[in-house]
Image (cartoon, rainbow, N blue to C red; front, side, top):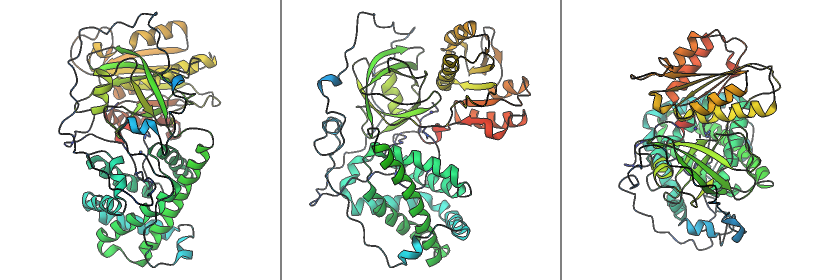
Length: 503
């Protein structure tokens, strides 16, 4: 994750796609998100664990009606980073982590837990079809006990490495849930090694923002094996343990390789200064951010954001524009109920505030070499990456390609991006924009009904590249409609980031 579906409730806790453990994981940001283990100092000091917050952030009442006026052109914001060139550094003396109230990592690598007796040479062999079968069978037994199994897993990590607890969110509810969903997704993807490699590579690159090092993967693997052994019951034996060790070794090697490759060319995270904050509706804001250095991404992708008000809590948001010459990044953020990050970004953030950004992720990008016509479904703030795709196609100058955009919301007032899209349609004859409303009330000329079903009525869509972004339920329903309307499965692109990170 990653990108804006409803938040999960707070711990009462925040729905946190925060530090994620280096284990098998499912798509989101993308992102779409496992744990982060800092190196163990020679004499580790147990940090104080903060008390879990009791409620979502206290934010001022929305300054509605109408959008906040754009700041005057004369109010230029100078980058904060010219005066602090060494700020983007993760390690001893990391002033950014100190400012974020995160314990600075010590140098060195964590000490590995004692390995249980097993055949090391056999564990180093590639996984077999029998291994995959054993992993799926053991997960089926553990699934009903997933909460207890993952809680035990994290307890083992914090017991052996207490210094890492402060790097996790105060409430671990969602973190535990994400881990087991990751294991299930990886087991289901075992028959698609290329797809699994692509996903795990992205996961390994993304873990750099948590401070994950190569030496952390060994201890995490041992804790995972111990937790599974405890809760797999009669399905756990020496053969099953060997299968898990083989698969985990493959997974960790892919993630490590991707992380080390990324470290040669990019930082683990970027800092971004908010330079513009526009309220479009009561609960939607368009936020423009200036990164402290060049930030590579493609239209249709998403990133993870962390705010100074909720350290160690990351959320996924899609880019709302194609890459710009000035390097600015734009996000559409909806403040959802109990959404700690989204509420802070909509109601509290202001020009001059500084956020942290992880690397870009996601596969919802256009294959310009295919020459196919495009079909896009954007629901709510899911219109953000669709808008970015439109801009990218326009910049590449491909007038022979047609592009149909269906923009859905519940009320006409929620179609906050409609004017901008219709202006693009007036300039580009190949672009058609159709607004769709699913709620009651005046339609203002928009079509009515659920977005996927309305799109189905305009079919068939054979030969199209299709892109879907919005609430997970809408995306899943939309995929079914598109398949029945003639769109080939391999040409349907989406990133169900909401399953990994909400709010």
